[in-house]
Length: 149
Image 1: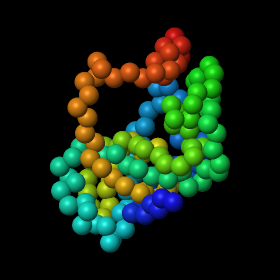
Image 2: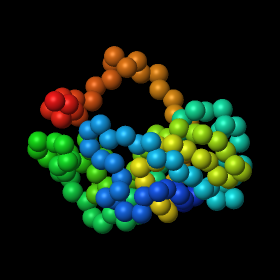
Image 3: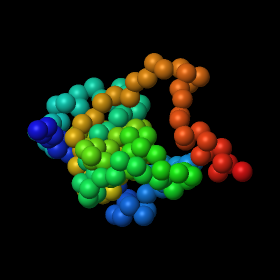
Image 4: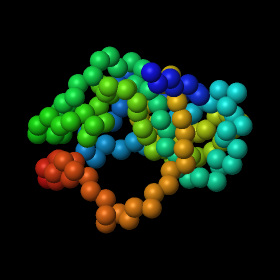
């Protein structure tokens, strides 16, 4: 059994999943706040030096899971591990946000796609050494090409 510890919660403009932009080309420009519990505030030391952060969080309102999922812009079902579906075996979400500023245990960020009150289980600095020309986007490339006309 794996046990995750909640380190904080998300403050977001989204109260319902229908409000969160979805699909190819969806823009995640909403600002929100990551409220880190006081006991974990020392873990934020020096975070201001990073422009972007990975936020790992829980789909705490999703129930059950599907191994195949059909995203809104897909023409067929795909494996859940190739989608951002909330109905996952471990219900873990991952979002990259831009860090705008820190106010003690609160991080003001841009790019939230989580619901208000979502539990945060970890934060890591966003780092990537993979050149853009080496990245592949699987079935999403086809879906984006179909919807761009």
